[in-house]
Length: 420
Ligand code: EPZ
Image (cartoon, rainbow, N blue to C red):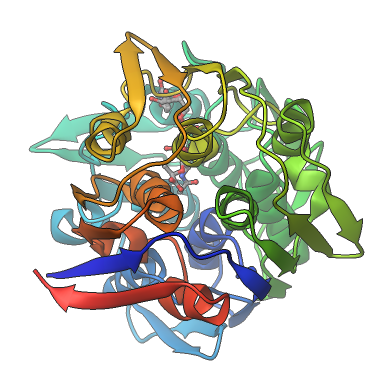
C-alpha cells in the first residue's frame, strides 16, 4: 500500500479542471442495465469506484470499454441478474444495480452492502420503495432476493430518519421507469446527481419529471433505448479545490464548475469572509486575510453537503474563533477529528457535534485515511501544515479524486508517494 507525503506551507497557484461527478456516474452506469442497446457515457472520471462499477457491469454480462473518459456499454451474449458479494462489498454504491436488474429481469439477487466507517448505512428505504412497486423481497445469506411478476406504479413516501436518500431515490426511480402506470416519489433526494441520472434516463426514453425537487413523477414505458450522456462536473471535488486554495492562501482558477451546485458552500464561505468570483464555468479563488469561524450543519441538498464536512473542518481548524460542526446525515462521520488533532488541531467531539477551536498553524505528522472525504481533509491539512505529513491508506483517496497528485503538482504542491 502507498502513502502520500505532503511538504506543507506552499501556496497553491494556477489552474485545475474538475472531473466528472463520481456520484453521478455510478448510478448512470447502473442505469445502462435497463437496455440491451449501446450507451456512451462521457466525462467519466478514472477512479477506483468507477472501475468497481464497470467490473460489476461485466459480471452482469455487459461488454464495457473505458478510454480517455468515455465509457461504452453494450450487451454481451448472456446477462445475469446476480450481483455478487465480492464485488458489491467493495463499494456500497453498487447496490443501485438492484432497481435496474429488477426492472429488466423482474428479479434481482444483490448482496446487501456492508456498513462503513461513516455509518451503518441501512437500505430500508430502498426496500420500502421497491416493495411498494410490487416486488417480493427475501433476505437470504446476506443477499437481497427481489422478484416481481409485474411492477406497478404507485405513490411512495421515501423520507427517512435522516431525510431523503440519494441512492434509494435512484433505485426506486430505476425500478419505476418500466413499471405499469405512474409512480410519484415524495421526499425524493434533490441532489444534482439524482437530477443527472433522471436526465440520462429520459434520454433513454423514460418519462420523468420533477427531478431535482422533492417530488419526482415517473410515467412507466415499455422499454428503454441506448443513449449518449455527459456527466455533470463533480461539485464535491470543486468544493475540495476551493478549500485547498483558501487553506494555502493561494490563487487558483477552478475550471468546469457548476456554480449552481455549490450554493450552500459559497454562502457559508461568504459568512467566513470569502469572496468567490465566477467566470462562466470557472471560479477564481484567492486566499487573503484570515477567515472568520462559521458554524456548519450538514443537511440533504440543497443544504450543506455531508461530503464537504471533513474538508470544511480542516479549514476551520486554522481559522480564528470557534466553529461548531453538526453532522446530521451520518452522526459518526468524524474519523478525521483524531487525525487532525494529531496535527495539533483543537477539536472536541460531542455526539453529532465537533467543536473546532481554530489555531494558527497545523504541524505535519503521520496520519491515516479512513474514508474518502476524511482522506481529502487530511490532504488539505497537510498542504497547510508546517513540515511533512504522511497520509497512509490513500487508496481511500483514489476512490473519488481523479489524478489528484498530478493536479496538486500542477498547482505547485510538493507531494509524492512512498511505499507503506
Ligand atoms: C450518497 O450515498 C453518496 N454516495 C454519499 O457520498 C453521500 O454522503 C450521501 O449520498 C449523502 O449525500 C453516492 O452517491 C454513491 P443516503 P447514499 O442514502 O445514497 C440514511 C462520498 O463520499 N438512509 O442519501 O448511500 C443514511 O444512513 C459518499 O462520495 C437510511 O436511513 O446516502 C444516511 O444517514 C459517501 N435508509 C441518510 O439516509 C436508507 O435506506 C442519507 O443517506 C438509505 C439511507
